[in-house]
Length: 143
Image 1 (cartoon, rainbow, N blue to C red):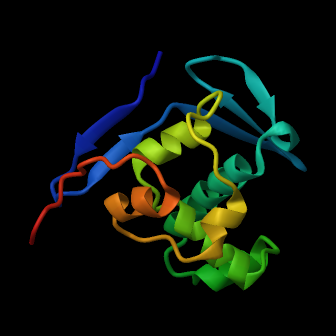
Image 2 (spheres, helix red, strand yellow):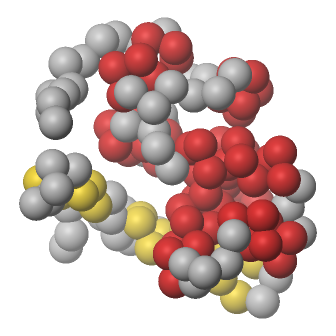
């Protein structure tokens, strides 16, 4: 059984693995937490979770086709440019915030409206401040 892992990379970034299995079948998407082992239907997920999952799916597609622009991928997925940019901002959330959004039940509650009302800060400490979460001391690597 997989568990959440955090691994430092050579370039100083962190690679965080959260054990979630996402499956797309024609017109539906289902998510299965590897830890719980139960399927959850796409439409029954909270809107914030759906947007977060979609963000990682779009990022994966973008990484597989690096010569395509983000806007081309948005057009292919029939997603408005503005919504695409907001959804892609979610993939830069701090790993612990992502993990909490995906947990049942979430440890904190905030809406898509709050996340999409302003541009999310890139700095994870600033994200927590923006969302009104208790502060954490993320390690800052100076270059």
